[in-house]
Length: 341
Ligand code: 5MM
Image 1 (cartoon, rainbow, N blue to C red):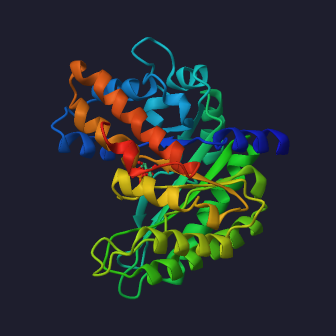
Image 2: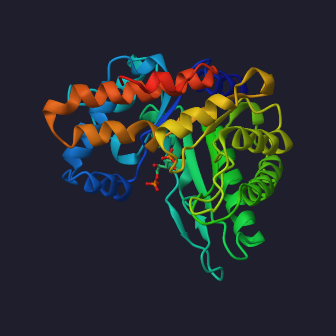
């Protein structure tokens, strides 16, 4: 393990004032998003869309790193550059989603375990050759009647830790993403309890597998009430619950925490991240930033609709959302940034 390289990469990915852009949707997920906007679900259109993103002028002002999918890291931009190279040329660190998706957990209805460890050592070596400097693996944890169970949390935490150790062996910084889903009518308090339990188990497994905390990034959910919860708590309650949960569970040696957006509206994701940087909540032991997919991409995708004539407008919308989140990371976001966007 090259400790120096891992530490420097983790710091570069989460450098001050910037965050990560998740553009690693698998083909089925990307196609689903395209279908919602009437966009053709083809490899050429996925390439054109990722070209729009990577070529957006000013993207590197607020984006330090971008997560690619297997298809994209093997493609070239429309100008003929490998996507990882095009990102590197803009000073954006390229990474790769390496999990093989969440499958039903045997014997545990309603629960999933993320697969993809078989052959991972070789795939990581290949991705490094293709220009990746970090990787990402997402586990999903559902809240429901009797859920999550211990078996689901343990299985996912164990897989995350084994993935992370393999990444560091290969010289790639692992993004460890245990996502507690927003689906359901659970309370903010329930999400806090489950997220705390999950993170305790995840960090126990990371320690057991010998993962270097200084050379990883945590990508958790914010602590939120369920989408169908009767009480939708305010921004300050969410910021307090999220920070209380993270302060209880995430060691200070971890350099950065980069939230997923998980289905929040773009504006709410920015506002909640911003609230966590209010002066009265500082200082925090780790950098606290974003690794959003939908909360950065959705407005741009809706504008693009697969039309070449809409590319410039979509790029402006994308960079606007990135800049809003860059500002939120500094505690400088306000609703006024949205007017005239
Ligand atoms: C939770 O999903 C990740 C963050 O995205 P949001 O900010 O939209 O919540 C995201 O990186 C996700 O893991 C990728 O889109 C890949 O998803 P699939 O399910 O296609 O592997």
